[in-house]
Image 1 (cartoon, rainbow, N blue to C red):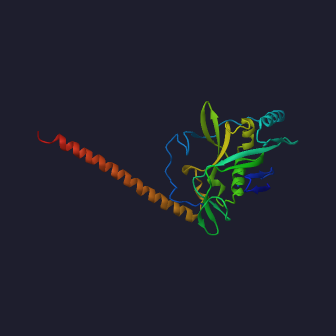
Image 2: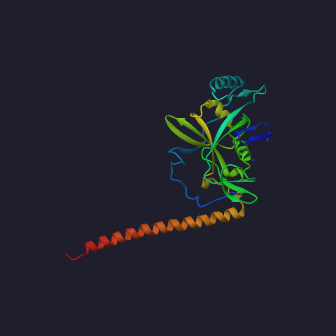
Image 3: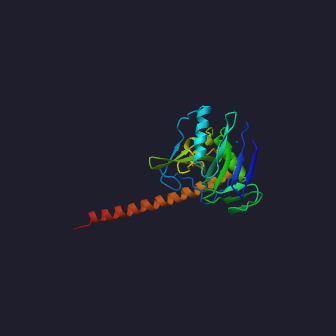
Length: 256
């Protein structure tokens, strides 16, 4: 696999060939979000369960022709003689935590400076990748991280697709073996119908073996802090209940 990157243009290339330390601050939380809620909008998180429908070479050719006729940004697809096609996908970076890079980038808000630097990516950061129909979700994640010189383990991240169905917006996590360019071809070029989002894994899905010992120790400190905060909240709540009960009991037994 070969790789080219342009930080200024936001364009990267991932050609087809046979071919996978985290910084936390007080913003990090180990508590799950309430069911049915996402980070920014009332969307549903769910695993990718749609069956993969394999297209014949002729069907692929027809779909690419239809796709290219609808493209408005010149990011067209190309069908090669071997049946493999290439094209472009755009990925929005929705990362809540800082990323750790191996060099000193000029973008983002710096959080630490040493041999590595941790900084937050802008919420509206969108990257365009040139990939082939053989590239998998895992390869796309690795390409995105490599573009920003990210030192974090790719296993800490997941690629989602955001799609519209019956006036509802859904967020579906893609499996590592899924092929994003195929999904782009089937959905068409309109990002309103389908778009890709890079996020961190949810807490329950994290591959803990991908973290170093200092990182895990930092997690424990954060967990202890949040546990104490939750205990204080519960104590105050039950103390308020106790006061109300005692007040009610005093009123019942008060001599008339």
